[in-house]
Amino acid sequence: MTIAAARPSIELTDAPEAPAVAAINDGLQAFNQAASPFPNSRQLAVLLRCPETGEVKGGLLGRTMQFWLYIGVIFIPEAWRGQRLGEELLARAEEEARARGCLGMWLDTYDFQAPRFYEKQGFTKFGEIPDHPPGQVRSFYQKRFA
Image 1 (cartoon, rainbow, N blue to C red):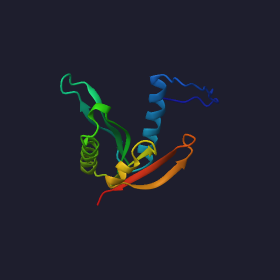
Image 2 (tube, rainbow, N blue to C red):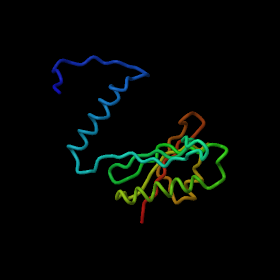
Image 3 (cartoon, rainbow, N blue to C red):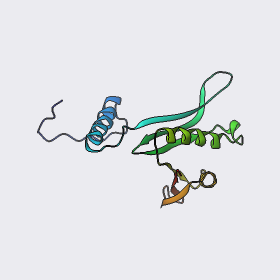
Image 4 (spheres, rainbow, N blue to C red):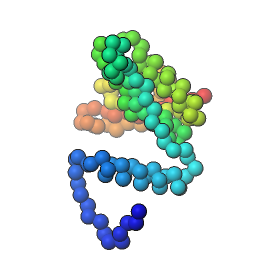
């Protein structure tokens, strides 16, 4: 694909089309792959399925890249909370991250979510953004593997 030398137009949108998102992500992925020896990033999901229907109702979503697992989302439906499923999701993700050669895992959370839970799972805080959103704190945690 050749890019024209003329200056591109710039468009702002809150609803980018799937091909536009793919073009940006794929372009960055190709650039990173060419510029560094790091392995390709790979998605990682640990799913919670309803036993009656098989439908996914929660779980953990992340991505391994540059020898670390980034955990982007953990969600457990209210009815399933208190069963130590969060611990199991993290343990399964950690097991897979180690198998992929990762050095550790990291995530961000808000003070109204689960920072103490992550600390109990061996994560340590390495940064925060106050007033994100106003009146709340967004914190960043990591767990380095031994």
